[in-house]
Image 1 (tube, protein in one colour):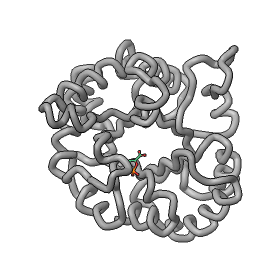
Image 2 (cartoon, helix red, strand yellow):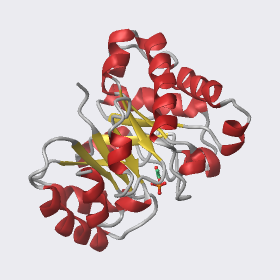
Image 3 (cartoon, protein in one colour):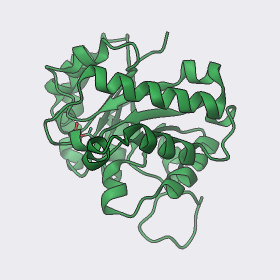
Image 4 (cartoon, helix red, strand yellow):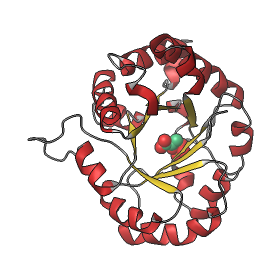
Amino acid sequence: MRIKLMAANWKMYKTPDQTRDFFRDFLPLVSGHTRDEIVVCPPFLDLSAALEAAQGSKVAIGAQNVHWKEEGAFTGETSTIMLLAYGVTHVIIGHSERRQYFGETDDTVNLRLKTALEAGLTPICCVGEVLEEREAGSTDDVLRRQCTRAFHAISAKKAARLVIAYEPVWAIGTGKTATPEIAAEAHAVIRNEAGRAFGEDFAEKLRILYGGSVKPDNSSALMAQEEIDGALVGGASLDPKSFAAIVKY
Ligand code: PEP
């Protein structure tokens, strides 16, 4: 039995004041909700406000990226040491927007993943095909390649905290959601790849989230799939009522 992880990716939205407002309204809505794990990943500058606001609640706080070096001359970057010192427990790695706009590659995803796991953070590693790849029938190959490269030179022991998010790029921010069946098929490919890399026991326990236009009205159909172990939610996580409804599907 895998406990579902319901994760919010706020992308580049909200100020610290807006972050405090969100938690003021969100926490009472989920205070009695113990079935699933909840994590909110705000922009770096909102982490402090989020951590303070979520203190004493069951809501964990994650970052949206992390560098693979502990420190150094890397202007604009943030390290695992800094995140841990803040009290951050999760980190999104390899989001398609970083792959699309900021030169993220399978190799840098692997470096970030290794570092996050070694530091004891819970990485939410994103994989997913673009529309042309789906239409060309190469979704499974793309997912296998992204997983193989992301998992390169990581042991099953080190990978224990790993979480994967399957995010078909054509479904992110577009309002087009993968059907529960499409998502479940992709999750099975990812789980199979995790089995090859880390062994069957590991793969059985691995949580694979679905992301891409998850909303309050499609959350329960997606979460009903045995293969789907939670959600990574962008746009609909910005509103406390909407994210609470998704979490409580
Ligand atoms: C995301 O940013 O990871 C995401 C899935 O966005 P949206 O829910 O807005 O499609």
